[in-house]
Image (cartoon, rainbow, N blue to C red; front, top):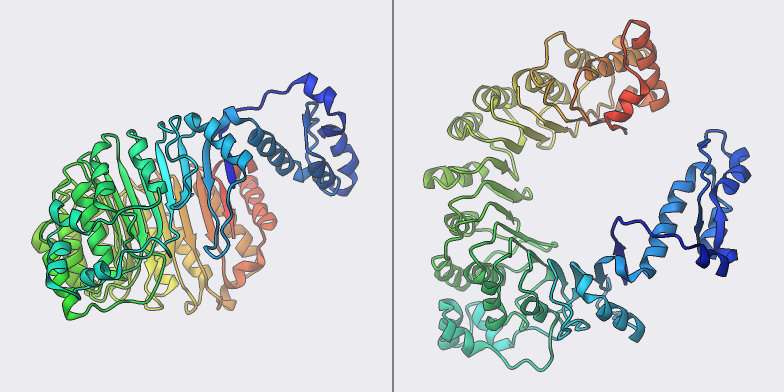
Length: 553
């Protein structure tokens, strides 16, 4: 059992310290003992003593002064676990269904006694420690973890869901009316953690993980309970079966309240399942019976286990006329151009401002046409390949005035890292509202990193210097240009880069992944470039670097 505390401070009681003198330790004394082992340690004198368990004291004797922050964190977490009045989040689970661990009586009593304070709860579906507990009515977020070996639907219903078995049962499953649902609902012999949904009418978020198949626990009665939650905003489901996924997705959409704003359907892996003819027939019967969700804003769906991308995605999008963010995860969409073409034809992305592509658009002309059609995009994540320069030019032309967040990912090795770095320069010059720019590069084929860095450090003014908050440039070029490289030149270029970043008031995070000969410059040496820049009149300081959240990888 893992218990996560909130950020409240634990009160220190002098009486408790007197009762446990062996558990009281002065951090300043520990610092003085270890100061000789770490000349770079902090010189701050921490006067306050804390109650620390003996095991932490023993660990502390082997720590340097610079490690004491971690020691203090462990101490704070350890103490607050015992302070039940501070509990806000409780997770009860085990990683393997072959090794089930039951809560001890004392643990069960402590959880029930403090149930009214718990706002976030995570537990496996068979754990019923809080089911029927009158105090457990204030949950706002729940996580259910699946252990489904004994709770699956009967073989008869499973066969019907897969398009097999008798025709009457198929009709009941496919049509999905309430009368048909009652016909397949079985008598529950044991309570389930899912009953907590009915106990907590003010739930805001529901997460279901490791739901590998449709289970007997998801009875129609429990599904219809979702309608009774006026505060429900988000549902996340993780599973991996083609027809059963579709059946449950449709049922969730059918029964969730109109207040839902976010749906996530993800998978934990598995092979791509090609549906049979019977499965397709069941699929076609299901996709036409979905109800609208007028307040839906965010949709995330994995496409890797859905070979019929359009027939799965289209009914979902038709349910969401006010959708603003669409994430299509993974790279397993075979023809991205065809999929996005259908979405354009159906006019299903008119309100979307945040879009994530799972794969590259292969036709540069179509990519530019797509960007011209949706000029209101504020966030774009996409892979690019052949024709990158044309796609980049179209993005800056049609979306340069609206884009705030950009993430570009290289499609295998079809674009060189040198082209990417030139693209970074163009984006920074052309997108005046840009807040975040991330460029992920495979980059094992582009020589001349130094020349590319020169382009990044060109004299052209960056249009986004007043708005940029995060810059992540991942440069990985094993084959450096030896004719134009020197260690001193590299340090100087790093200094010039920091000098340019200094004038950006909102920049809070920068990430660099250096490859090839750039790896020879460690962070400490790179900071010499800042010193060199200061000699040229720059006001750049180490405090500025800390403010920008530098990550040097």
